[in-house]
Image (cartoon, rainbow, N blue to C red; front, side):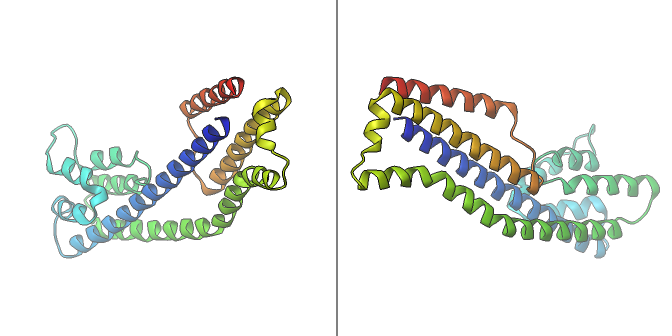
Length: 227
């Protein structure tokens, strides 16, 4: 029971992190393509508002921003909408676009050059992240392999006739070893994930995840005591 809970928790956390990384990368790509489309519309001679209203539909990931932009709000102009959208993961580049748009409105300067510079900067940052992700893929594969090594160890012990699973589930010393092993496994994976996140430039997990991890450890302890 404890091993099943541990495996389910690790698999779920890995899938959620991979899904979050994929969604964040899609948002960054969408912002880059938005800047490219906006630059093209501006170079064609359209006004910033009309150009953005046309360019924002370039990617389905920006549908919520396009719908918000299509609904006029007297209390919020275009830079305000961009600044608010920049708070979401992967859309940080919209903050630069909002600042340049605001400066262009205040000083009456063309927005085309600023959008072109933002696009070049975002593409360079995207390339850097892709290179870093390629370098970290080996590290993530090693961490995943180390995470499943205990399972292979149990399978090897069972193949040799040692029956470690029965010892871990039926004897007090085995239950203690199982709980300590699960705890060390989780600590090791969390530590390596934190190191990789630091290198990758992502923030550390928020406190609610820590509370969920604590409740999971309590569940493992109860499952081990009932075995």
